[in-house]
Length: 326
Image 1 (tube, rainbow, N blue to C red):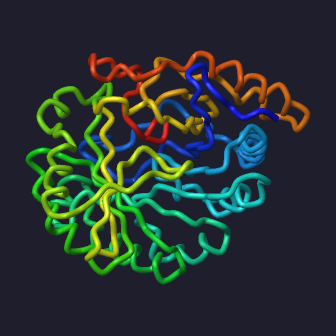
Image 2 (image 1 turned 180 degrees about the horizontal axis):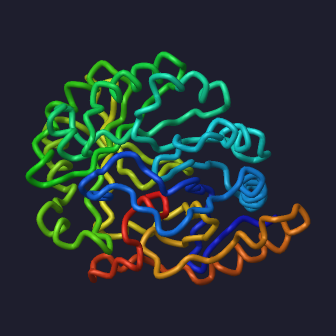
C-alpha cells in the first residue's frame, strides 16, 4: 500500500493511539478538577485496536505511541503492547505515562515489546510535583523510572510542561539529574486548550528561554531522525542525558509533522488542535473492512492543514489534552 502523504508532501510514519481518556492525576494544566467522564465511556476494544494497527502499518506507520489519559489504567495494557509488537511493519512501540505503575510493571511491559517510555515529571521537587499534579506520588514515580532503566529500557524521556512561576527555574536540577543518567528531559511549552485560557495566559513561557540558557552553557543541537517527534534535542559532552524542547508556537513547527492521532473512541485527529475527529470505528468491526479503512485514511489526509491556528488563539474543540492523547 502507498504511504500516507498529505497535500504538502509530509509523510506520516508515527501514530499516537489513545486507549483511554481516564487519568488518575489532576494536573493543573490538563485536568485540574480530575477526570470527569462524559457519559459511559466506550473505548476501543483490543480486536479493534489490532485492526487499526494493521491498517496504519500497511500505509507506512513504523512507530506507535500508546497514550491516554493514563494508558496503563487499561487492564489489557500489556495485551495492547503485544498487539502492536505482533503487527508487521511496526518497528517502535512507545508509551507516555504518569509513571505510577512503572515500579511494578516495567519489566512486564518491556518483555511484551515496549521499548520507549515517556514519563510526565513536571518538577524534581516533591512539593511542587504534588502542587502541579494534585498527587503525592513523586517518590513512587522516581522509583518507577529507576525500575524501567533496570528492566532494559535504554533511554527514558521525561516530559515537563514549562510553567512560568512554577517550574521555570528547575533547569539546573534537571541538568544535574541527567548528568550521569541516560535520561532525556523534554520541556514542553504550555499549549492553550478550550478549558485553559486564563491558566495559559498566567503560566505560558516560551521554550526559547531554556534554549538560550542551554546554548550559553555549551549544549548543541542534534539533528532529528525520521521517526522522531517534534522535539528539538540538545546534547552536551559532559552529560549522559539530553534536553529536548517542544515549542508549538515556534516558526515552522508544523513543517515536519509526521504523526496522526486516533482517540480512545476511534476518531482520527489530523492535528492535536482540530475542530473535529473523523470516525474510524465503523470500519474496525471486521477484518474484511481493511481496504475501506485504508482508503478513508488516504482521503482524510487531504483535509490536513499546513499548520495549526494556535497563534490566532484558535484551539479547536479540544477541552483538555487527555481527551485525544496529547
